[in-house]
Amino acid sequence: MQMSQGVEWALHTCLNLSWLPPDQAVPTGKLAAFYELPAAYLNKQLQALVRAGILSSQPGPRGGFRLARAPEDITLLDVVLAIEGPDEAFVCNQILRHGPGGRPEVDYRQTCLLARGMRRADIAWRRELAAQTLAEIREDVERHFPETPRNTRARFAGQ
Image 1 (cartoon, helix red, strand yellow):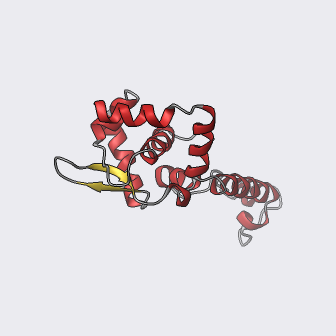
Image 2 (tube, helix red, strand yellow; image 1 turned 90 degrees about the horizontal axis):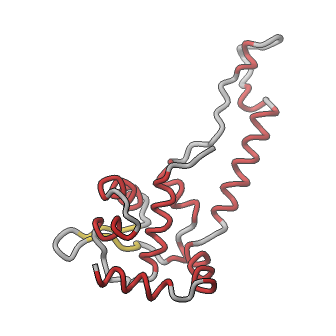
C-alpha cells in the first residue's frame, strides 16, 4: 500500500502550524512555498483537513490556515484519514465464491481467513497511527532538532 504524497504534505504542514501562535493563520501560498509544493494541490489537502476539523480556515487578507485543535488532540491517523479516506487498504472481492466449492450465499468477507488476516493488519496499522499525536511528533522533532520551531516561525514571518 502506498499513500498519496498529500499525506506527507498534510502531516508536515500540520506540524509546522503547531509551532505558530494559535491565532496566526498562514495562507496556502506561504505553506506551499515552505517546501516548494504546488499551491493548488496543497490547497486541496488543506481543505480536506478543514472538513475533518483538523485545520480551520480564515478568509481575507490576514487569512489562511491554522490548527483547529490542539496538537495533543490530532493523531497521525486523523490526518491520514482526512487525506486518504476511511476505506480499508484491502478489499475482499469474494473470489472464493467462484472457486471450487464456492457458495453464493456465503459472505466470504467474513469467513475468508485471508480477509481476516488483512483486516487484523489494517486494524493494527490504524491503532499505531491513532496512538501517535502531533504533539508527540513535535516533541521528538524539538528534542532532535531544537532549532526547528524557531526556524519555522522565522520562515513564515519572513515570507
